[in-house]
Image 1 (cartoon, each protein chain N blue to C red):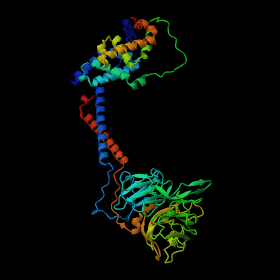
Image 2: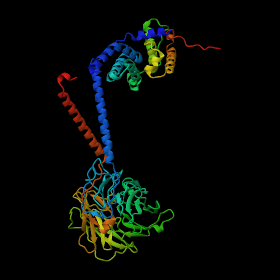
Image 3: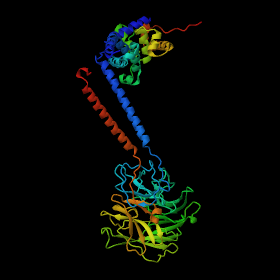
Image 4: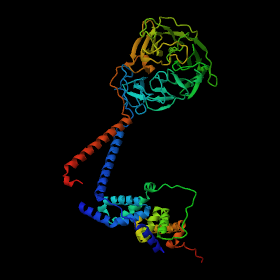
Length: 460
Length: 174
């Protein structure tokens, strides 16, 4: 029975001709095997090199200098554009920062959200890349002590490199001077064709992890930079159209909402940012707007003058005038050294900047305006004829905010050699690929030389 | 063993075995070109290990079996199937050897590679169950069960091959 199956299988297969086996199969198979073994060994060597290099260059926690050898924190006298290889905050934490900055020199088409951070103690530069593009000083804020960056709904801890949700739902307006409370605006609502509105402005307490105050704004739009928290963190000032609304945490209903206890008229002026409250907590700074005739930038005649008002009766505090800030796209107060000296950031317009009237919420400052080419840190002193420029950003860095504690105390240190941190992974990978290519080229060259050195009669 | 001696031994082995290996591969795959590829690949492996092989014939058959069983080769060699609603006509009986070959080849193609390998080694190369188990790297019991399953499946797939492979075992009542 099975012999029939054997016969049938032979009948099926016996007619099949033998496979053609090349005469050089033996040598060719062995040569291919040798090449594969060499390639595998090379790949393993590259892998080991890569792993070794990656281990050696892994982001390591920074060893902070000891107290005796540490550099005193301060604002650096010079700011540089961080190169592409600069490490991120997550890879290598810079420590408490002196400045957060951005602009065309920091961003490019591939890194649209990139911002730079420089540490307070030494020139340790790192970069931040939030998920959405933010303007340093407006949508991205540095806490007064320089430890945190608040951007895109996240708080980046610059001493650890970690980030966590800020706890607020909206965009940043201001840090409280002690950094414990965050003023924010709820997400805009849009009504066609061009009307934006902020439902409410909130004050979030980081210790309680809850809002301690909410102010219903109504139909106005509150852009970044138009709020300030009082020095003790219990009052909130918000510019709503042409008024400053003052609200107390103590007045809040059980649901957290409160109505303003006072509204200061601005008469076309501005609330000058997070540092608007004077240290006494009873006086508030406002800006009046006018035009100059002998402006530094003739095409941009917008001029700002600082005034201080008593929040009890909105009366202007008497005294010598602050100097006019001429041709400035915006003025942001960082804080006060005394009742007569304010530290501010001002936007310097370029030739393309246009001085537009405040007739439309969206088109107005203090949102960083198109055409701002630099930011200056200035000291505004009563009785002075002009602002004292403390620092100016270099070309290409058009957005900046500073750690208020350092700026207020005027702590400025000499810039040193910049440190851009450990190389990023893409740079290590590119180096490894180049090394591998060079190794392969060298291997090919050696093989070529070896082949040519062998007598022709012995070549395969 | 010097290189020249190894090369000469390998050439002699190829000369002696290539025909049988090709037929073995053909019965495993059912395709002449695929069988030729398999034989060349298997012989290349033998060439690399020639000095270390005690039984190159057994080794090369093992390689042929594993390569035929490997998924990607199976996938690459398998012709695309097109299904339609018609059941192909079967010859009522096996009129001649050509009909027998066609039916047997179609039925073998429906077996697993292991079942085909067992049948080929047992009934084409007349290997014992022990030798087959050694060649395939499995137990003798596995060879027995695979043989039984293969024959049973052939009976199911092609009843007209009954005279080749015998009737199904009958139940015995005690």
